[in-house]
Image 1 (cartoon, rainbow, N blue to C red):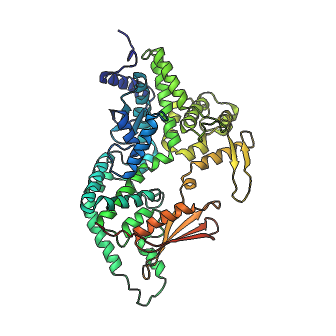
Image 2 (cartoon, rainbow, N blue to C red):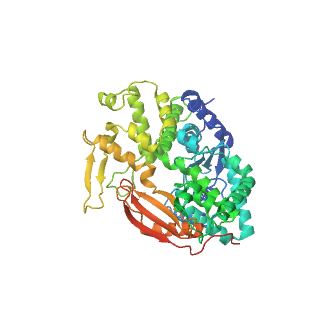
Image 3 (cartoon, rainbow, N blue to C red):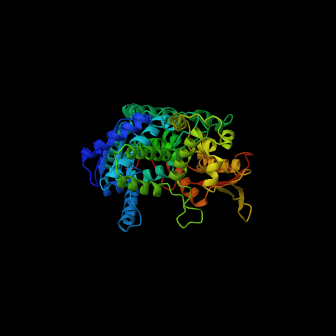
Length: 511
């Protein structure tokens, strides 16, 4: 009897089971991966497009933007201007992998190795995911969120709910506890405590605003300091602050802000680990597919099909190539995993200087699993991008000083430029570089209830005026009173710019 898992392109559900078990023997049995139980779902092209539109979540509330994204992707797909992902994987327990029914048997093998084992291991073991997410509770919470928002649409009207979601989505990047009071996410408890929390927060909120001295009373001391103390300012999580403290929001509006904030919080690690996550999954599928071929479980034709797909995935166009769109996370992540493998097993003298902790250790999977568990993209690149790989990928750094009329090549892949290159590339993946450092710093609770938000400006990079105006308007409408935004230098504290917004259509229990 042939040892091949399949013969030809076709497959059945029994084939999928055989493939999964064979991949597991290698990924878990030989590579030692630690995974959640797997759940593999076969979906159509239209279902894959639908998953694209709703951030890859299998159960999600409705919003007009998802329909817009679906239409855009569908038109491009039908016209042959884009392909579809072979799979989408959900960070849940069990780990759900959605694979396309149109995949060949070879591609089903590749994506099961990539998603059901590579991504699965990374989700379960990476510290950033462990800190921010709750895989055991996410599916039930999404069901709750979908049902709750649907009920709100019935009770208060689709237009009112949609407008609130528009504002919440616009501020979602400012809805994460990155530091300070962050606690472990428990989505199951969020559901069970929903009614009690709403009653408690409504009572606490009403009491807070009711007991404030009126504007006409004599104001003693620093009333802004008093407000800051009561409200726990400064607060970096703007959605959290509005959810808890906006004077006019109804309980159902606060709950929708909370839903949007928690979903954004859950997805936040995806942004911090894109290169590592894809690099891990690509490295795993590469090792598994090679091992399946070595042991005669897939034939030469299937192996060449795999190599063609893999090569396309990890291709990195040059900066002057028409298809260049930045650093390919699959290319950089996979190359760094293979480079670590080389350093661990066959280091050069240069490697021993740059990576003394892993050079020559010999235990490839032991080192990689330590790396996968303890780093995110910025720290991973800062620690493990080697001079050899910088040379191979022909990296160079561009300095763009807003006060200068020309760009300057600040570092190239040579001995003098290696450290600057690595530092510059790592900074591109630092969330503080991509997300504006904003926080609520003051509220005039004894007067006009004006809200003050502060943006700490890095390297003179001010906010884009158009986007700032729109976002500030959303904050003002949710808060219900005037809002000012000050942009201050993160080092000196000097004020660089100031913006204001008044509520045009304030939220307040409409419907």
